[in-house]
Amino acid sequence: MPTEKLNLVPFVSVDRMMKLVHRIGVEPMLRDLAAAIEADFLRWAQFDKTPRIASHSDVGVIELMPTSDGRTYGFKYVNGHPSNMKRGLQTVTAFGLLADVETGYPVLLSEMTILTALRTAATSAMAAKWLAPAGSTTMALIGNGAQAEFQALAFKAVCGITHIRLYDIDPAATAKCARNLAGTGLTVTPCRTAEDAILGAQIITTVTADKTNATILTDNMIGSGVHINGVGGDCPGKTELHPDILHRSAIFVEYPPQTRVEGEIQQLDPDHAVTELWEVIAGRAKGRSDAAQVTLFDSVGFAIEDFSALTYLRSKLAETGLYEDLDMIADPDDPRDLFGMLLRAA
Image (cartoon, rainbow, N blue to C red; front, top):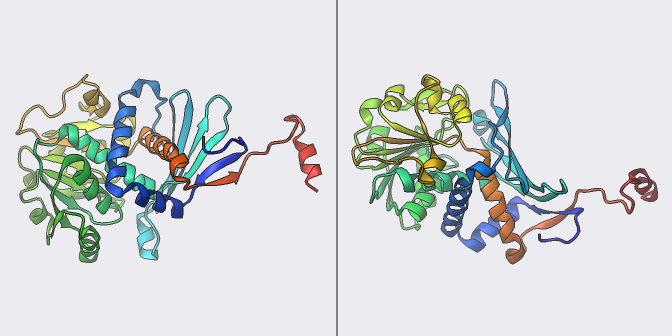
């Protein structure tokens, strides 16, 4: 714990998060996060698991994502408002908290807008390590908004991807992404259509933002042997893939009770067979079974991944010092005399 006073809670601001990422390095941090998430997936049974608690509106969603491993409790607050872009605002913002189960006291508060982008990309790449064709070198990245660069660098760092083919309906987004990836060692090819982007790609990542049942990929676009990383479909009524793709794919998910409501598989019958990713990592289920198989990681994001990211972040605070203490917890000399503490403050 970075502080000895229980009433002082370490807080990682946006500024300190950015400094911490640069201190560690983007790609090393993505590798670290992928390893941390994989380690927690291996102890999946130890966690409380529940679908995120969502409050939907006509313009977006606000969600809480809680979990606990019996020693530490964590949650993330996150929103998803695609129309925010028109007002110059982020589509997704987030913050998260860890608490000690024994005392109930919080032990970390952090921004998670940046950290969520990092953990989402790390989870994608971690899944692809188990599911993508061996020796994959090229990824099509369809949707070039706020998540895109993180996804590209995670696949480079974890899976060894060397070529990225970009497409977005907004050419300015593609230009932004190509500009930001310059100098990273990736060969980046902007494309004019989604069909062009997937040419020669062994991995296809979709990460679009519109809250609609969209068809970013149609069945005739998907050849044999590819891995699809479906990231953008993450709430009811928001999908990216044509149902025919799902019917001929081996589908892997984080937590079925959540994914069946929010993921691509909301388009399928409730009893359609899917495999939980943790079972593949633990050796309890097969991942890719042959070179011609189409695999799909139907990623919606799950609380255990945020828990992994927050606990990893907490482990880095002492060595980096990139946090500040917040006086968040009332701490009277006599725990029964909270009102007396208030009186003495006058």
